Each structure stands twice: as C-alpha cells, then as structure tokens.
Length: 301
Figure 1 (cartoon, helix red, strand yellow):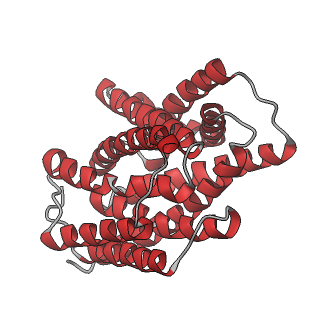
Figure 2: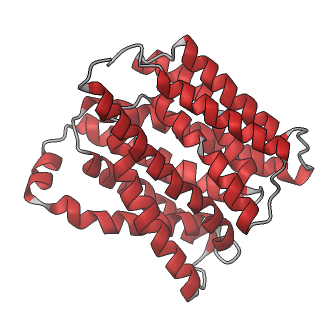
C-alpha cells in the first residue's frame, strides 16, 4: 500500500469509528423514545429534520450547479439509495426495536456483513480477501457467542423478521452507496441531502398516515433534535465521505463494532444483560473488525 493511501485510509477508519459511536447512542435513545412515539413517525421525524438541517448547506451556488449537472441516472440512484437507507431500513429498524432488545436487533444487523461481502464481490468487484473472510467469520462467531444459548420467545419472531428486512435493505444500500461514492460524481454532502430528502419525506408521510400525529413532550423533542443534528445530519455526511475510501465490506465491519458499544450502553441504561461469555463474544467482534481493516482491498475500483 502506498504512503499516499495509508493516511487517507487511517483517517477514513477514524472518521467511521466516530460515526458508529454516535450511532450506537442512537439505539438507546430510540428505545426511550418509542415509549411515547410510533416507530415510523419517530424515524420519519428524525430523518426529515436532519434533511432540513442540511438543506441550507446544499444551496450554495457551487452545489446548485452540481445538482443541475447530475444526470437522470444519478438522480434515480440517489433516490433509490434514500428509499432504502432512510425509509425502509430505519423504518423497519424502529419497528424491530419496539419488539426486541437493542443488542438483539444489532446482532441481526451483523449478519448483513456476509450479504454485503457477497454482493460487493459481484457488483463492485471488491470481493473480500481470505483474511477478510476470516475476520468476518470471527466477528460473526463473537456475535453468536454473545447470545449463546440463543432463546427467542415466540413473541419476538415478528421483530426478528422485521429486523432482517431492515438488515437486507441496509446491505443493498451499502453496495449502492459505495458505488455512488466511489464514482465521485456527487459530493458526500449532496449525496446525503438528496437521498435523505427522498427517503425521509416518504417515511414521515407514511408514519403520520399509519400512526397519526403523536403528542410529543419537550424531552422527546430534545431527543429528536439531538438524533437529527448530531447523530444523523453530521454523521451521514461523514459516513458517505468515508465510503470514498473504504470498501462496502470494510465499512460494514466497522459498523458491526456498534454491537459492542450498544451492549455496554444497553447494560448501563436499559438493564440488558452483559456476562463474561458476552464479553468474550464482544471481544471477538472487535478482533474480527480489526482483521478486516488490516488487509487491503483486492481491487481499487
């Protein structure tokens, strides 16, 4: 790996780690918010407000010119990305969290790494190396150990099914997002604004139609604003920036490390379990994530 590439990759990894730290706190805040707000409306408010925060930054002369120069194909790709990552995936995630513990939902997300790895090799020609597959297997083994023995109450099956829908939507969006970012036809800011606008508007309208307008107290509004500004508008722009450097698999593995932070936060604030075996499992997740980052890409795209 050349000297000019290494710093960029290191910066991208550190930026991605900052993003997942903020995203991890979101899962705990969402669990609190779901006590008073319907899942689709909650998710829609979060992403739509984040979209409004970013709109002024997208209206500079240079950005307006860049938007006008986008081909129809790129508008369609960004719209598809938005519907997947800002409507289907978070909408299903919020519904799943209304049925399942936060760490259980996140564990199901870790299996998206395998889906992303397979799709990445086919559509992006960024197939994981053998060492990266070992890292993926290590992290997935850690996720399994964390919950072993797995006992799933019958009432949680709906939540699991919805969580898998969210995971698959995110996996497809990860491939699509990496392809758009790698092409560099649009800046990370505009990529976020256009896609988030498309997905959040549809999600919010769907939530209000299905659940009605909730009565939201001051505490929940503060929570929504924090999630919108710090944990969404800022983090998604930064995340889309890292996708210019990191492959879809590498980004997915870093995202999987959220299971560690979420487990600790859920133990501290939600009373969810954390045992010695769980700790070993989380350690394997961290190790697997590090292994994936140690091996360079098979192709630069």
